[in-house]
Image (cartoon, rainbow, N blue to C red):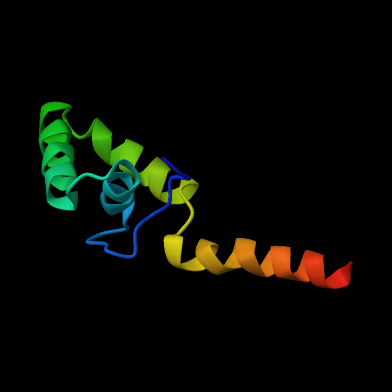
Length: 77
């Protein structure tokens, strides 16, 4: 398990895809479970999804950022 990132394989914002990639699950199953939880929780999972959308960094933007920072740090020394 690594850092939880939003997936590049996204349907809405990549939250379910990111959870699936992090745990090694199928993204369709995670999306289905998320949908069922949303229906049974009378929509409160939508709020949780939005919170995760803003808290989880995007995988496409964060892959290069750490590597670039480390290259800059090593290059300066």
